[in-house]
Structures are given as structure tokens and as C-alpha cells.
Amino acid sequence: MTDAYEALTANLAAADPEIERLIEAEGRRESEKIRLIASENYVSEAVMEATGSILTNKYSEGYARKRYYEGQQFIDEVEELAIGRAKELFGVDHANVQPYSGSPANLAVYLAFLKPGDTVMGMGLPMGGHLTHGWSVSATGKWFNAVHYGVRKDTGRVDLDEVAEIARRERPKLMICGGTAIPRTIDFEGFAKIAAEVDAILMADIAHIAGLVAGGAHPSPVGHAPVITTTTHKTLRGPRGAMIMTDADHAKAIDKAVFPGLQGGPHNHTTAAIAVALREAARESFRGYAAQIVKNAQALATALSDRGYDLVSGGTDNHLILVDLTSKEIGGKPAAKALDVAGIELNFNTVPFDQRKPFDPSGLRIGTAAVTTRGMTEGDMELVANWIDRAINAAKAEKDPELDAIAGEIREFCKAYPIPGWHA
Ligand code: DSN
Image (cartoon, protein in one colour):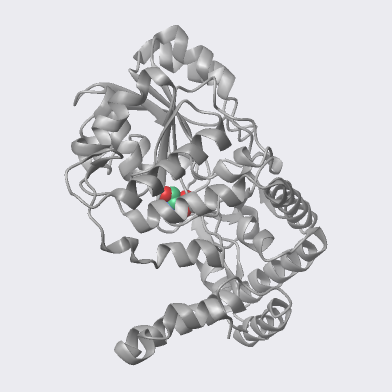
């Protein structure tokens, strides 16, 4: 066992063996499978230690030096460190590191700048957006007048002329770019021009690509979008949490919306872990990590295309690949379930203009942030594509033993790529 794993579970085994057993089982599962969920990663042992620290004991409603509870001598410093590191890493005027996760962060932006019924414009969920970008089942779609743009059918890419046309017609107060299933570079400058023309505030949701932006592998929205939201646990490789970064003009409204508008006390253990992750992301080696994520995604995309898989937009510029399985004559859900049995973890996903339902869609979403953390490189992506193809063919032919055989091969393969915080 590594020291970190022992340190994190030494008392748990005696105090709550049921939970300890489940954590052990999850650790084994995470280490024995190939993780291709595009929104997941493996955090460092240092991030894990901060997350599991005594900072979880402290209430600190308010902001540094302006709290509603006493005893903030060290918590204030923790939060100020996290804020300072976010500002420096991303080059922003202001950062709020208190949102509990991505959805509350996005909701805080609505609260800061909109009134119920105001118009918001985001990418449609089935086109690659996010629930909180005004989708009908989300509070953001119920309480606001949400309008959506998508991608072109022929290219699978956002068409800024179409975005501009919708924006001129609908005059949104808030425009959102970014999403959860966008395999291509986001043109922040192009969105900013449209937002300026219709007098909308532009919000860039960079949850998926924050690590790529920090590591110089994707253009930055800074200087184009005055409000930037992100989770901290995807390509950025921090704990589960979120941040809102703004220019000076939008800082005050955001802080008021997060607290007291939407939340109570921040999760200080998470804030500390965000600070640790931001320090890690500022290292030179993180630039190499970000570049390798993209190289791996492009290698995997090529290897899948070579095996006859249709990719939305034809490939990828970032960490994410969206596979349309229509021509393979299998749904995304049965394919994802078979792949899970075979030791490859990903999620079924709608593809643009999907003819199937969201809970049984045509696509698979794949991401390379987690496998890159484990040290896998382009050559490994060829193997991964081969396993994916074999498993999908086995699922179609209902050959369960083949899925088990692949899982065994992957278990062996993964031994060469240990995950942080887990014993072999
Ligand atoms: N659930 C996240 C994702 O998987 O992309 C977005 O919130």
C-alpha cells in the first residue's frame, strides 16, 4: 500500500468497515479499468490529502477578512491562496472559489445578472451544451426564457453566423459558450463579437477544457468573456468543486450571488484542494500533460476512424471524442454497458440531431484526461481503440466471454499505469 492510501483509510477500516470496503472496491475498480469518461480524472495524492483534511470542520460564511464566524485566521489564508493562484494561472482580475460545483456556479451567474423571465442563450443540450445552459428540465430553463444554438448538420461544428442570427433575433441578456460534448476549439473571440453586438454578457463555461486552457493547449476565453465558470475536477485535475472568474466590472455581482445569494459556508477542505491543484497546474510539467491529453485524443480519434467509427465533426481538437454509432447498428447505451464489462468506462451520449432518445442515444462520449494522467501515450491509444472495437463487435454478437477476456487483458495492461493514492 502507498502511504497516502494507508493514511486516508487507517481509521476507517475499524470505524466503518462497510464504507472502507466500498472505497477499497472502488479504488480497485478505478485502477483496473481504462477510464475514458470525459469529465473525470485522477487527482494527485496531495489534492486528496487536502480534501480529506481537518479543514472540513470549519464554517466560514462570507469572504476572507469579512466572515460571519470567528476563528478564520488560517481559512482566510487558504482561500486567498486559492484565489491568488487562480488569478495568476488564468490571468483574470477576480476569482470566486466557493461554488460547490459547476451547476451552482452557473446558477450564480444567472442570479448575478438576470431576473426570472430574462432571455439566456446557450448551446442546446443534445448539441453538446449543459443542463444549466437553459435546458428545459433545469431551473435555468424553467425560470428563464432560454433559446439555443447548435451545430451544423454537415460539419458537426458551431456556425457563428447562425449564432449571430439567433442572438440578433432573441436579444439575450446572457450568452453562454462552452458545454459538455464539444470536440472542437471554441471561438471565444467570435462569441464575444456577437455578444457585444447584442449587448449581452458573455459567459464561457470552460469546465471541460479548463486544464487545457491552463496548460496552453486550448485558447483562453480571458479578454473575450468577462465571466468564466469552471469545475475544478475535469481536465484541471483538482477536487470536485468550481470557480467563477471575472473581469473587475463583474466581480462584485458574482461574489454577492454566490454568497449570500445562493450558498452558505464554503467547503474549506475543497478550497484548499483547489489551491493545491492550481499550484500543480502552474508547473511546467502540466503544460506537457495538457498537450499530451490532446495528442492522445487525436491518436484515439484516428484509430477509431480507421476502424470505421463515425466521429462527430470528424475528429477532435481537445480531450473529447463524440462517436456516432448509427452506422455500427448498435445504440450508445448497450455499447457503453458492454464496454464497462470489458473494462472500459465511458458514457453513452446524444449526438447532434440524434434520432434516438436521451436515455438510449446513438453516441459514446470519450475523453483522454484520465488515461493521460496515468501516463498513457499515443501508442496505447491504438490498443484502446482495438479493445473498444472488439468489445462493440462482441456486444453485437452477444459474445459475453469475449468481453470478459478483454477485461482480463485490460486488468493486466493497467498494472503498468498505477493511479495516484491507490496501492497495487
Ligand atoms: N456531468 C458533467 C459531464 O459529464 O460533462 C457535466 O456537468
